[in-house]
Image 1 (cartoon, rainbow, N blue to C red):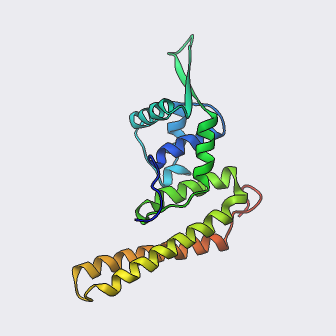
Image 2: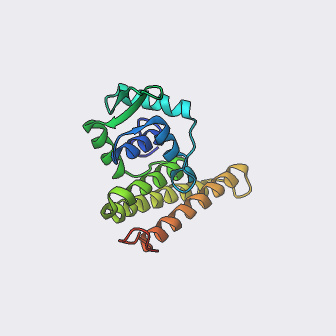
Image 3: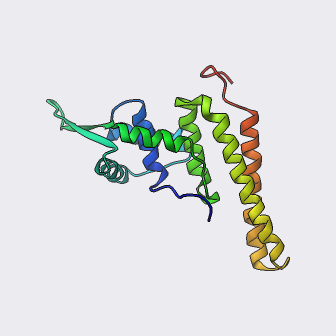
Length: 186
């Protein structure tokens, strides 16, 4: 296995990313993280799991919940991103996915937030991710050469190679089609 593995699920980085733009309540965060026109395309999380992840992030000191009493409604907790959480999120934005099985959720989530907050970093991060994907492809091709051509193991390795090849081609496409500089422009 290559590279360092992230210390917690991508959904927790998603929460940091959503709080990067400003404080929010748990229900608002859930609405954003499950939005079928945005992160919800790649992510789904139950609200109970979301609150458990918020508690974990708060215990780490990366976010802080502030209870807001309500006159006409129950008290709600508004979550704020702390400086260490902000630094952790920004560092995560510059990393690459280190395992093919994490690519879809990690890299697409990272790209979503790069597009919103740091579009000037997209080219660099995509180029480094492409190099990582190409290394995966090189590694899997070596395994292909070691397997008997008519074995089950070869079939599995071929499947993995086709997935990684698809990732390589898609990241190349992404690099060739950077986001427009004006929001909403296609």
